[in-house]
Amino acid sequence: MILVTGGAGYIGSHTCVELLQAGQAVTVVDNFCNSQAESLLRVERITGKTLTVIRADIRDRAAMEQALRSSGAQAVIHFAGLKAVGESVENPLAYYDNNVGGTVSLLQAMQACGVKTLVFSSSATVYGDPQRLPLQEDHPLSATNPYGTSKLVIENMLRDLHRSDADWRISILRYFNPVGAHASGLIGEDPQGTPNNLLPYVAQVAVGARTHVNVWGNDYATPDGTGVRDYIHVVDLALGHLKALERLRQHAECRAINLGTGTGYSVLDMLRAFEQASGRPVPYQIAGRRAGDIAACYADPAQAAQLLGWRAERDLQAMCQDAWRWQSGNPQGYRSDTSNA
Ligand code: NAD
Ligand code: UFG
View 1 (cartoon, rainbow, N blue to C red):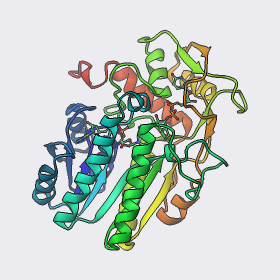
View 2: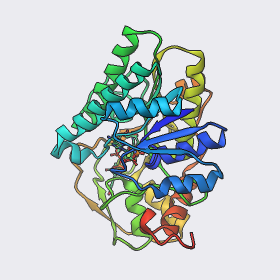
View 3: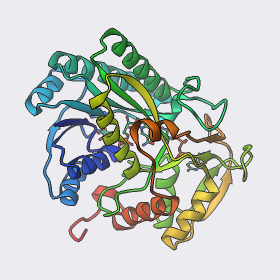
View 4: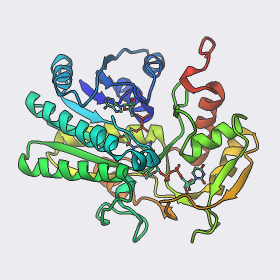
């Protein structure tokens, strides 16, 4: 049994699909602050299997202990957290409380229940402004906003925890830029309000909900001047979690591993690929740089290949096609009329 915190969210729901399809029993804990219960109904529809859902906040330690005991979980995949960089600058305490405080509470509950296997969602944001590319796991760590700091604090906490008690088995997965959706078109990314991230914004332009994409800067030191990122299909990312769990069965370690493709694409590359996948125009305007953005960021995925036997298999076309299938079938996300979905 695997306990998945934040399992109703974007990456969590895709990981639940892969866990269930691999024959794992799954219990989700989510407070639905950034997701809809509908996503989990669709996970069940895709897989033809059921999972247990507990509506609880990870900051509620007693509820977490109860969830661990009642589920009989042997391991936890911990997605629950807040993730909007701009919001974290506006309201840092909410990020420290939810992300750091929530993780402390979860770890205390796990310790009390003797569950010491954890896969944690970290981010390439912990590398700060890259000093060299591609990013290897031993690149110096830094943070430029409270969201990033919260990930860095949690990473350090996990390393300290493992140093204090070598029975802990911890995989820190540093995601690059997750995009795309399940190939069924039934689950995908469902941002509330105006999307911050590029691909959901582009998808809303293609579907006609927004007029154009603002390209945040074309004067970076990149091939076409626009920002370069390592976009990774969310299903590949989900599969990386299963590989991480497999490795932890054999290794009592605390290790950070990049989950990326190793290839960087620019904003303009992404717009063109999306136009091709959707058959719709994606108008854009060049705007000024977004505060805090970096020029380029992509992974060295060698460690994941070597230690997990994992590599990303879905290409840019699949990322855009799957994102488009989700967006066009569910123009209002999970709030769309689903009667014919
Ligand atoms: P998401 O917002 O879609 O999912 C997070 C889920 O956690 C949501 O269902 C939300 O309701 C739940 N949640 C939040 N706080 C909670 C709490 N206190 N108690 C219980 N549930 C809570 O986000 P996502 O894109 O699926 O991201 C999952 C994880 O991966 C996050 O930790 C995020 O920081 C990390 N990450 C995401 C990205 C990305 O670009 N999506 C990149 C790097 C890392
Ligand atoms: N961009 C635009 N217009 C938009 C949105 C984005 O031009 O409307 C550009 C950005 O300037 C950047 C690229 O598209 O060059 C990607 O931007 P995203 O916001 O999609 O992703 P980021 O790389 O900025 O940030 C993401 C997550 C962060 C995480 C970081 C590193 O949103 O939470 O990856 O993992 F910290």
